[in-house]
Image (cartoon, rainbow, N blue to C red; front, side, top):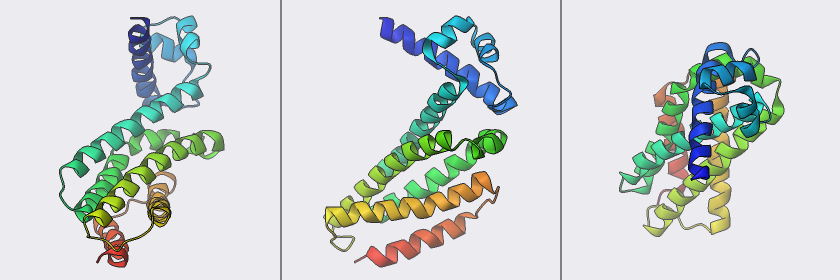
Length: 196
């Protein structure tokens, strides 16, 4: 029962903080602002989180989980590995574009905070590598792709994530919005190299 109550309180804190982060940014939002918006006392906020950066990390983790879940739902609806890979990458990119308003506000603040950037990036990278690894392994198993060792598949998954991450960084840090047809071309170039 306590765990359920704790989760409800954390969700309320994250919901309130998310609104404030989007409105004011990370630097201008205070723990007191978050407490007031969540309808909690400051001591309650500090019981669950040591700092607003910790709250932001949990908020970002929740966004990442939602992003991956939406992409996985799209992947599960496709039959071939090629379709799965394309829809996964397109969904991730579109969802990241949809959350770019938050990053637009905190972009400048995050640029100077490498620890926060690295934690968010590592979390997303790990989940994306796992997902792409599963898709590529599925394609090999179904004889769509050239056979590669599990180690090589993991390496390819990391390479794909690194390439896509460069596009994401353009979106968030440079405010460059890439057209979907360019992402399609990148996916097609990659698939040409592994397709049977």
